[in-house]
Length: 112
Length: 112
Image (cartoon, each protein chain N blue to C red):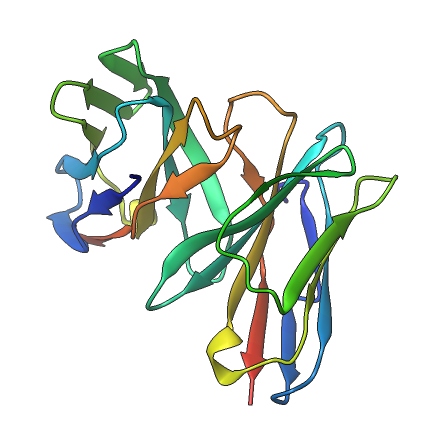
């Protein structure tokens, strides 16, 4: 089956690193994504990783994938108040076209 | 502006009514996806169209239907509305490859 889980809430101080975690259950996942949703807005694609990769870095964002444990994480370096938002991980499975299954989202609060 | 346009942004209607939500995908994108976001269910995939044809169906109620027109815009029709249908409805588009979606800013539907 398909189930993507995330913790509900994370609070960090400005300048610290944030790590948002996600677990998924379907081993046939091919691509995994991180999206950001700010209040009143749609979801913005931040980054994605192919399942044969362990890590991907893009400026302040680092994605780590542990395929054995079906664990995905998003690290945001030097977190800023503008990073406060809800972060969703999503998986795309090889047998489901391009359909994405989303986790419930992690609300990141950055304190000044 | 993500390039995906959804109208209207807000809709308030009574139970039992029917509404139509509209989506114009990003230029060049052939796939359109509809998602429902509610507080208790999170982001739920409803349906996907690719170049005018239905490609995948998720947790879409029989009271709901969608279509994609030759100019690639899509409409989501919701009928016999119930209070529980109140949610944010997102449209997303992609070129058809596994590079993630681009989301619109959503239509907030309130059923009273």
